[in-house]
Amino acid sequence: MNTRTGDRHSPRPARLLPALVMASILVGACSSAPSSPDSSPLPLHPVAEIALPGDNSRFDYASLDPDRGLLFIAHLGADEVIEVDTHTQQVVRTIPNLSQAHGVLVVPELRRVYVTATGDNRLVILDEDTAAVLGQAPTGDYPDGIAYDPKRGTVWTTNESGGTETVIDAVTAQVRGTVNLGGDVGNVAYDPIADQMLVAVQGKGDLAAIDPQTLTVTRRLPLPGCRGGHGLALDPPARLAFVACEDNATLLTVDLDSWQVTGTTGVGKHPDVLAYDQGAQRLYVASESGTVTVLDHQGGHLTELGAGHLADGAHVVVLDPNTHHTYYPIPAGEGGHPALLEQTPSP
Picture 1 (spheres, one colour):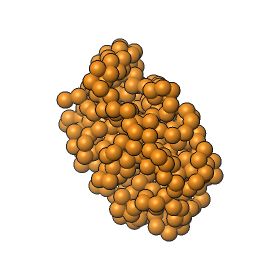
Picture 2 (tube, rainbow, N blue to C red):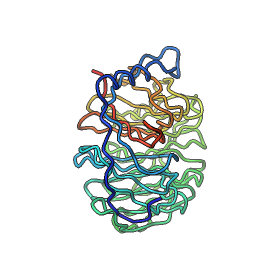
Picture 3 (cartoon, helix red, strand yellow):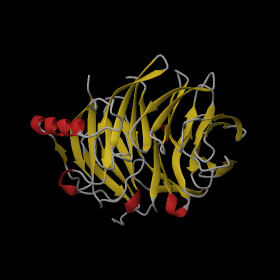
Picture 4 (cartoon, one colour):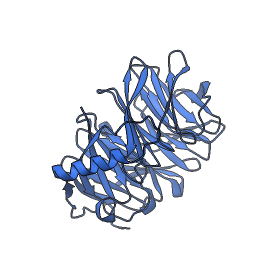
């Protein structure tokens, strides 16, 4: 592990894939067995494979500043965050000494990056420009995903095994409060339409809504047919939430107005991270099995556009809303080295 904080590395160039190689990779992805016999070929085309530094240990969450093209990837197994310039397709730097870097979230308007250091049960605040540490705050046990509440300027950390949410001032790093959810917690997201935080509480099998002002749980929705609800994504204008159930390869659609489950969809084994493309109305579900499922949203209903094995370890997906490209960090790419796969959707 590199130990020089904020050091800029000599970037390793992206391996741009010629047309024939791209075609062969696409055929390979499509021929891999998807999670469901009814799945169709994965509707993605490879754009580039960007070599990443470090070892072949596990990657976790990633977060993109789309206008600047800066992608921050939590390399959990290497205790670091890798910063990639998606415009130049080159590594900018690695940011070390982040014990079990797990969740990561960049907030462009603040020029800050927030990282959950699970090994130390803390949140670390980084300067987006320099990678300097600006502040730290204690969290609950095993901090995982992160969400930002722009109205109150707070960062929420999901403390998975602690069963809590820690609410932290995004600028001062002061802890503002803790919300106890009564069981192992999945991901958290801010709903700007209803001004509420939504949390998948996998330990209780429900979706919880929290008032971010009073830090109280206002309602809970049981999620029948969902075992291990963890991944969470929202379509706020359409008043929908999507919950990935990691223990039974299922995705639930929740109507946030009627507060009811309105759809159930099969996805890849052990679904993890979700990414929703608001402009294209597409939902991407990345799974621990390496299967990616792409779904089209129309009128509150999801239709599978395709699914297939993208790569081993492709359980994290990040979307660029400007280009509609998706990015997948994987432990072993071409040549056996860690890599970032860039994909563009099929028309």
